[in-house]
Length: 141
Ligand SMILES: [Zn+2]
Ligand SMILES: [Zn+2]
Image 1 (cartoon, rainbow, N blue to C red):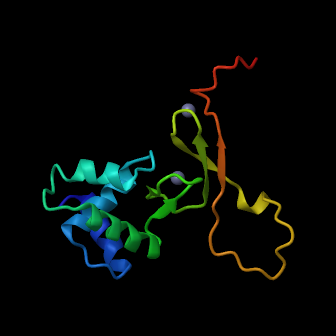
Image 2 (image 1 turned 90 degrees about the vertical axis):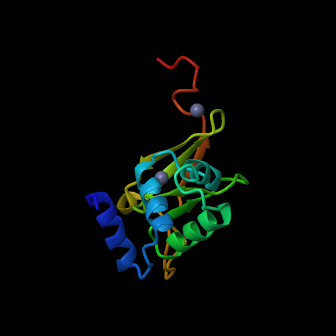
């Protein structure tokens, strides 16, 4: 067993999830991909090595991971859900042109939120939409 599989098994067990091969592979896929894959992305890549995999299984695994805070669901506008293996607090920027979702850092301490006295915040979702620097062809000097 290589170290990455060991770490995945450990993480799943810590979250009371029995570490099946499919769950381990989905977890590794999420943690190794930085581009916020969709269910289709994950299924299409993993079915090559796990022919018994179905999209429903991928969906159920992702749902479980989200409930157990191993993964986050990223939903911007009406677009299909994408998944993120990085559960730390960070913002997402969706490019309207290429459709890529980029991570950016957010300093929660410095974020000014007003009108939420006595509210308890469980999750932060910070979404921005616009045009990424690769698609932004306006010359900005
Ligand atoms: Zn773009
Ligand atoms: Zn992200």
